[in-house]
Image (tube, rainbow, N blue to C red; front, side):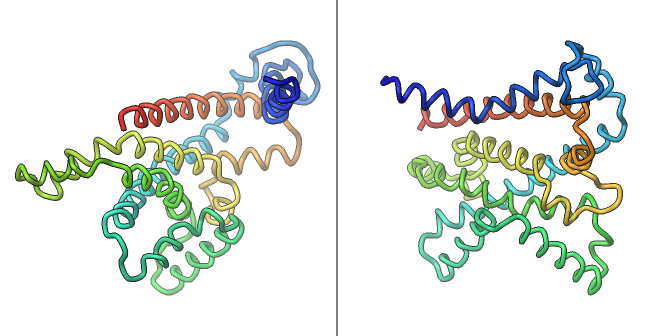
Length: 264
């Protein structure tokens, strides 16, 4: 590899990951000031698990992530099946555009529109009664479904149709064929899509800020409120643990995608 390409490669890696490395190093800072090095210590990791506010916010984000990722996968798989199996149908272009719109829609616009929708529904039918965990979950399902379709639809389109045809010839019904043949084949893509939707939900700040209510503060919202005052060492420790968890999930998703590619 030419020297210029090597330099460009390492410069790009440094630009992307040097801030993360600095954050991880400062999570082991003994000083109470998060931006001033005071020696090596793991003290703030212990203090992190004693902070009930952070633990509660993490639990809210975890629940929202699991619920919204599951809902997004269900809707995304159904939408992908419609786009792949039904061919050209009336309104296909409109339907495809609508399910892909959250990919390019600014999160501020999505958050404001969902907020106005929830307020209007509450005034008309009394549901949802206020904003909280339910409204955040519905909002995250809205934009998570589009990402699920991006992952699942290509796998369904490239899947060997002869397996399903053989299943139908042997007497299996459409539902049995889907659960016994189609679903296992596209399972790696579905799991990868679920992990992606979960990470996007867990990381979201803008949409959650518009759709959250009292008692439903997510972890990104809490971290943002803390950072606006000062960067505390426990936030660095929390961010390091999140980076570790996300890295493990991404590695698992990449392994699944590689296995899926090799099998196909």
